[in-house]
Image (tube, rainbow, N blue to C red; front, side, top):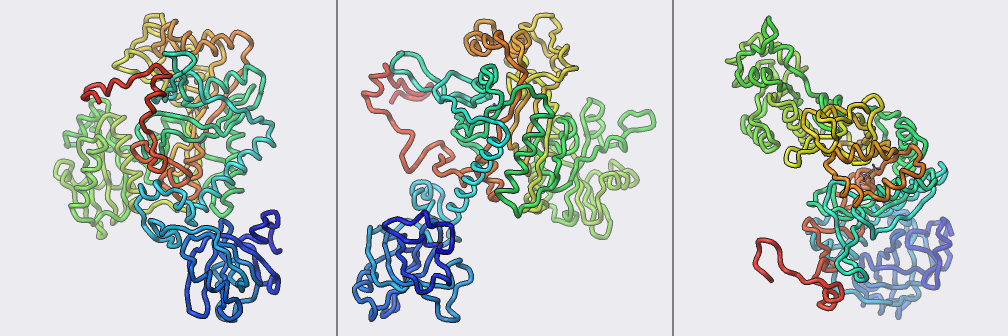
Length: 624
Ligand code: ASP
C-alpha cells in the first residue's frame, strides 16, 4: 500500500478509492464505493468508483470476467458496489493526470452490488451544476457526496483539529458547558425549552457560554476552551444561522495584550496549518481603535485587502474664518451642524454612464443616505459634476486633489451626521470592493479593532446599552466615568460621563467579516452591579438573571478575559465562501427550517399535554 490509509482496510476493501498508485500494479485489491460514472462500451464497462478518499477507474471485460460484466451492466450512478480485481497500469496515453489514482485502473474479476440507488435529484458528479439550494438542503446527504462539500467539511475538521492542538499545547483545558441553561444575553432572542419536571418553567439555550466560562475562571480552571454550540433566535443572513459554533475561551490573570497576543499566535498557527498557501497580509496583525477604523474605513470590520480610505474634505470647505463656505448648501449645513463631509474614490469609474452613478446613489440611499454627490474625473482629466456650478472650478480641483483621485476615477461624496456619513461610505466601500474585485481573494487580512465605546444610549429604554458584552470591563483610566449625572447608576441619562467610557473589548476582523470578539471582564461585584444598573437592570432583575455570577464574585474572582471566534465564519472564509451554510453539514434555510428533517414541526399532542402547554396562536393572527 502506498499511502497512509492502511488502517482504513475493512472486509469490504483492501484500499480506499484514493489509494492505489502505479507501484501497486500487479497487486490484488478490493474497493467499495459509489458508482460515480459508468461508461458502457459493450465488451468493456468502465466504472469510476468513488468514496470520500478519491476515485479509481474500474474496467470490467466481458471476456475475462463475464459474470462481473453482467452485474456491472446493471449498475447505475450512485449504486454502492464492491469490486475485486488486479491493479494494472493504464495503457500509455490513457492516464489521467488530474486523478491521484490516474496512472492505474482496477481490472475487475468480481463485482457485487451492495445497494441500489434511485436516480438522484441532481448531478453528484458535475462540479459545475448549479442546484437549487432548497433541493440541496432537502437531500443534504446527497449534496455532501459532492466533492466541493466534502472538501469544505474536511477543511472545517482540520480547522477544529488545529485549534484543539494549539490550545492543548498552550495550557488550556477543554470543558463542556451545558446547553440547558438560563438566559445569557448576547443581544439576540433566546430559544427556550419548556421543562416537564418543573411545569411552567423553561430553560434557555445558551446564546454563548459567557457566564459559565467566567464561573470556570472563579473555579480556578485558569485556561478554558470549548468548541461551543451557540443558539440565537434572530433573522438569518449569509453569516448567521440560529445555531452556530464558536471557539470559546477564557483565561485568568491576563490583561488585554496577553489575550490578543495568544489569539494572534493561535490564529497564525492555525491558518498556516489549514491553508498553508494563503498569504497572511500582516504579521503582527494591525491594531486599530474603533474611532480609527470608523474614521478611515467607515466600518468596525473593514476589509483591509484594499485601500479606498475615507477622505475628510472639510479642510477644503471652510472659508477664511473657519466657517463652512463651500457654496454648496448640503456640505455647508452638514459641517455647520457638526456633521461630516467625506469621500471615497472608486478607481476606474470616472467615465461610467450616468445610470451607473444613479445606481450607486440608490444604493447609498438604501444604506440610509439622503443623497450622494460625485466628481467624475474623465480619463482625459476633465471633471464632470452636477455640483461643480456651486463649488467653482478651483474648489473642485482642490477636492479632487485632496481625495487622491487619478484621471479615470470617480469621487463619491457624502455629507451628513458623522454616523451616517461613516456608515454609508463604509458600506459603499465594501460593495465597490466586491464589484470592482479590489481584494486579492487569496489573501487573509486579519486585524484587531479595540477601544469600543462601553455603552450606547438606548433612547426608548432610557438606559445605556452595552455595545458588546454586558460583562466587559472598562479601560482603567475611564473607570471613573461609569457615573451618572444624577449620581445614581439606576437613574442614567444621555449626558452621563458613562457615554464616553471605552470598553476593554477587542474584535478580530478577517477580510471584512467580524470573526469574533472578546473582552477583559469586570471581575469585581461592585463594578459589575454599577455597570448592570447603567444598563437598566433593577437589583431584582440583576439577581434573577446574573445571581450566580454576582455571588461567585464574592468568593475570590481572579482578573480574567477571553474571546469567542466564529468557527463557521472562519471555515467559510478559509474556503472562499460567502455563506456559512456552505461549511455546515446540516444548516437551516433562510426561514430557519430544515427541509430534510422537516423541522421545525408541530409537536405531538401528548408532548404539549406533558408540558402543560397549549398553542394559542400568533398575536394578531387568527387562531389555528
Ligand atoms: N460571549 C461573547 C460572544 O459570544 C464572546 C466573549 O466575549 O468571549 O460574542
